[in-house]
Length: 127
Length: 111
Image 1 (cartoon, rainbow over the protein chains, first blue to last red):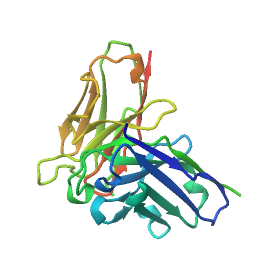
Image 2: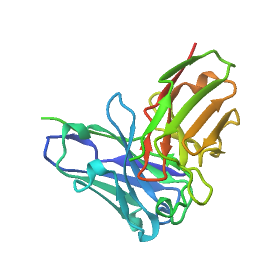
Image 3: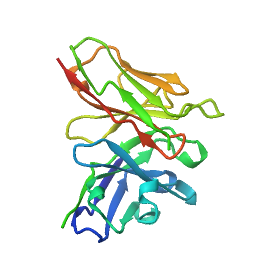
Image 4: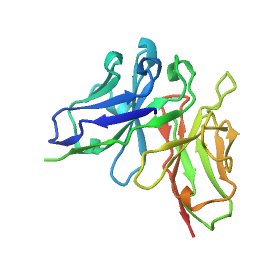
């Protein structure tokens, strides 16, 4: 069974850092691009970042560039999102999602949707 | 950034009746390879989003055939032929031609 499971969320103060994780099971993580998508309370979905398969790099939404870093450890089947300089606007449920098709992925227009999503981890930034 | 605009904001449908959701993009989503980079997702209450349609009109695995996606360029439509109670949720379009962006969502309820 293909699964993603996020962890690491919590309550943090403004200006601090937090790292959330996304553990994959049931498939070989190294073959797939993995995205992070977030959802602020009562709001819609917002795309955050992508780590592409096969070392094809990372991509970020403009609003997180320079603050967030996405990385992957294929040997541990885990993707990370390091979040620095957090503000209240970063309060959200953070979901990771797997690209449907293995390979070059979004960066090379080899993109066919995100078919497996985790249940999300909640990050609350508050003093 | 490509801006995605969905309409209506909400929709109340009688079971068995059809429903239609519109999604418009501020730029064409049609790439030179002939693909429209437009996904549809549904987020059912208390759940993570799930993929319904990719590349504008291709149904994801396990998605009932009462769901269909159409359109090209800047105008796209998600249709549900006969709404069922289990279809309640918020439907989102997302463009993937450039840095992905989502529409604001359309809430589907049962009358």
